[in-house]
Length: 225
Image (cartoon, rainbow, N blue to C red; front, side, top):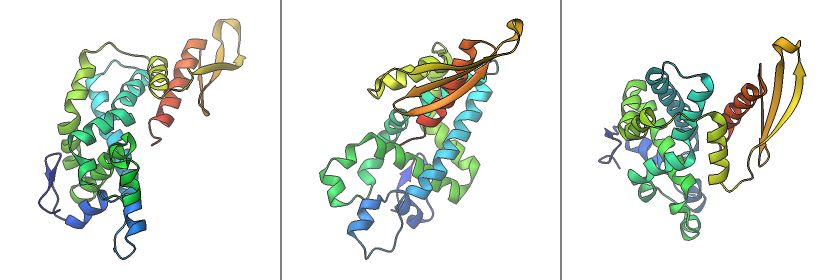
């Protein structure tokens, strides 16, 4: 695997790339192979992707609120969005899977393509540091980021609803948990739930509290793969 270039980056350590492309099912069926799966690199890559995309959105949208930035990032780092990039880089085809996983359609799963992209990003970070990793992420996700500049700005509530619909979940359910303070300066605490996932937010209006709760839940669900 030493001669493979991914996202414009060529690995110096072939064993690191091999780890980034190894599914746990492969190791379960090849107990003689001295290797590890991609899950630890995926964990690291997830954090690095979040950092780089968050930094880029912060730079490009100086007037955006925290909720708007969260909504934008959620669109870009969703499983579907990352899987699209992973498939474009042919990562599922390069992955080492166990026969059972292969036969049950594992290579075509959205979750695998997204996880492989994050594990490869994590591997690039380990080998070459943040600057090289940032270059790789922006090279492969630049078009999607650029599209957000001209697209209508979406609220966290809108993006959360779109996520729920795409995942075939019930629509988000909002509940007001607390209203406090004098009438001219109310404080609201709202909870939102989607398919067992729950988050709370607060604000000086019910809508602001709902937006805050939606933004927090987006943070949660876009990192579940």
